[in-house]
Amino acid sequence: MKYRHIFFDLDHTLWDFESNAKLTLQELHANLKLSEYGIHDFNLFFDRYNQHNDKLWDRYRKGFIRRDELRLKRMRLTLLDFKIADEALAKTMDTQFLDMLPTRTILFPHAKEILDHLLTKGYHLHLITNGFEVVQHNKLKYSGLTGYFKQVITSEASNSLKPHKEIFEYAFDKTGAQPHHSIMIGDDIEADINGAKNAGIDQVFVNHKNNPATVDATHTVHSLKELENIL
Image 1 (cartoon, rainbow, N blue to C red):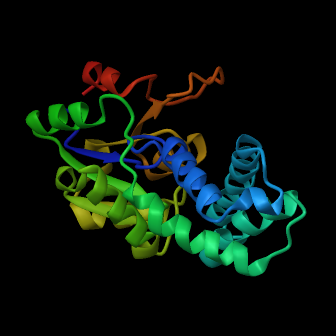
Image 2: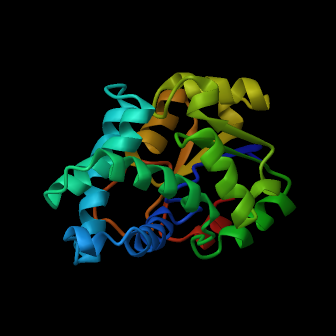
């Protein structure tokens, strides 16, 4: 077979980050009584959080901010949108969010089914993630995914981030994979698809949201189930 090593992204590809984050923030909203601070519309609060989180992750990937700044700022800026300048509350939200989030277990449809299929066919499965080391391993543990992957390559361990070539080279070294026998599966055009291109490996763009944008990837799927037609 052409490919021997399959590298998956985790968040937004296998593990449904948005659904899991929403449940976690709903619980925080209730536990911390954020409505008493004036945050009455949870959906608006969640929308603002997503906007800040996405922008800060983009800055983090590009090396403009550090991990701790990303973590705290996404809460602080969200609160400021509701005219709440409370540093202690932002820190509490950050700590509790990262304690609770990894225990969530919502996966995209067919996630375990396709992983079982790929293992049965003899592929070596690995993860390459920009997420935080402890957080990502806990997500795998609680969602029952740990046993599927031979290696979990994080940005912390590799001292690099997707889409930079260095994290993929670190992954090749850890797994013994060669680029021409490898393929990357992920949802992020810049981090996963362009990152894999930079590293010289084929790519599968997982378009869960059916975004209309045309992506120049080796393959595009709209469901994890469709991977059976490729691998």
